[in-house]
Image (cartoon, rainbow, N blue to C red; front, side, top):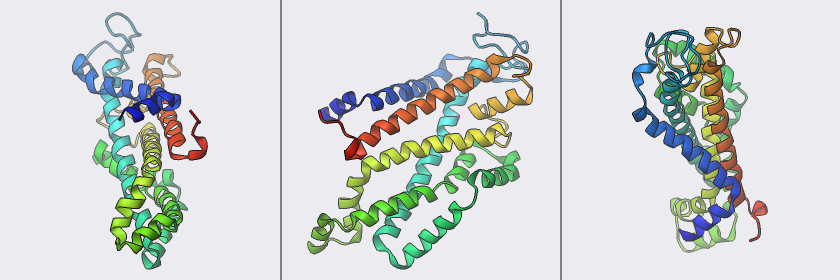
Length: 282
């Protein structure tokens, strides 16, 4: 535990990323208890008011407060990223291990499916599917939709890693000692891939959040939820940029940028752990 804390302190990229993400997580977890959620309701206040003492980030055209809208939208956007990224990566890890370790017919089916689906433009497919579900789409459904369309990349990457690792000497020793395939995977392979899986998880979360914001900014997200992407969509729908209502569109974009900076720094820091060539000699 102490060595992990010490390594994290020495890894400045990982530390900086963790600080940014943890601060945003704390705001999304604690913030809803510190604000009046009634401020997110249509008609709560006079519309199009700029930032001031009464409303710190102003109000939008339909009378909602921007600050409560963003604070209540942050956990929803993070939920989409964690569920979609985690589930998509889990599917990719399972299929990647089965494909890479057992080969044969399972490898042919899984690799063929992943390669075929990777040729389909994911954003276009997201738009088509989301447009048919717009009226009934919820945050959790959006997360499941994203997970179902983003497992192919992790599957191919994990498969390539397993193909290399299964030829290592320690795997041959485990086989010679009588370990079966499941034991080799869970005892020998997965522990060695944990840092890489951690990097992939952070990347998958970022990719899922980006995908959700993309379809939401097009108006295809959950219409009744105050996610960051839907906040941007409604600001565009009401021409906030043209009308000079910068306090409507700028804050959610700033939060999204900070979130991606934090996730990028975390990914780069974890990559130093997963990739021995990037580790600093200390």
